[in-house]
Length: 439
Image (cartoon, rainbow, N blue to C red; front, top):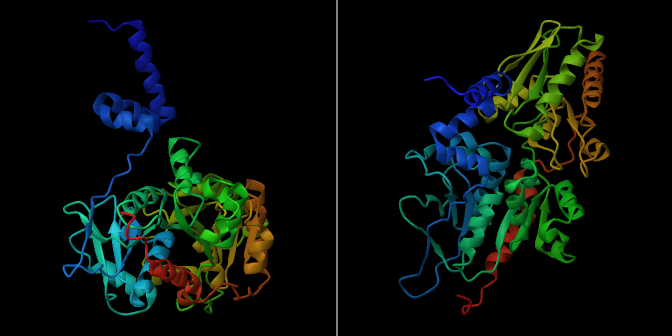
């Protein structure tokens, strides 16, 4: 049977789409192969999983010791990057300080083997052994049992909604919200943006990673950050850069120069397109006439080799453990790490601590002057091809004349120092005895 003209036009339109926009072609194909998945993608509204929680009581009739329940979207080896590691550090140091802690994987079940988790925690803290009173949990096979006086700590906007629901079952009226970026900015203006922004209207005590982010939230006047007295419900800390790992080393100047590029294709704020355009422009200048290699980090196997021109290729470096990653920074010359965010991002700070040059982008409250005050190794430029290109050329010229970058980084050198205020405020919140008639 002959196909109608209209049907042929639709088929041709989809074939052209296969060439021009494969991602949209596959999305359209799903409406025939998996209608439910196609509808979910079309609506683009995440269904936030409700946690199965029940309140436990001490068999002697006494209230159990209050714990801190730390909610993460998922707990697995692939999620141990800068932001999640900060959550783990905060919770681990609380646990080592005698506070019972539950690490809760909210949206994915735990793997049967969890030994890796405690090994990783020991590497992060530098304290051997599993903290007494620290446990790993999920809510997929049985309810999460918590105490009526427990604190709940959310680490991402989806977990903020889950934390609010958990708190409603306890005697407390707020949760602790660890905010490490402007998370609505992870998405275009959309349903997800709206939900991420609305999480900032919930009842919480904010713990904010970096003053630049705190300033941005208050200047944006979004959610509770528009309230005149909300600063009384906020604790701000500056991140620590572990000087056991991230420190200067002597390098062989006869080796090829090496540029690292923090490249995360799934993270649009990382500005990969601008970074590659700037690299292509910069390598065509006389500043990069010498022997250079270009390695991408952070992509986890998702980045193909990218030609930069003049025979140069950006290749992805293999994924490394924390010590291997630190060594790679130490034995490289420049890091290109754009980030369209009020948060500085850890690679920028870690490279600067290794006495190596960093080219990054300024953004709102994260000004070039602020970053230069942190370290003279950080070159902050505008988020444009021209700005990034000039930053790269400047870095290459400084290296060529043998400039020795300073190793001074005006941040805490241990997490114990960085988190003193955080530890204190969580202990204070735990010590507040909720009204027993609230439940």
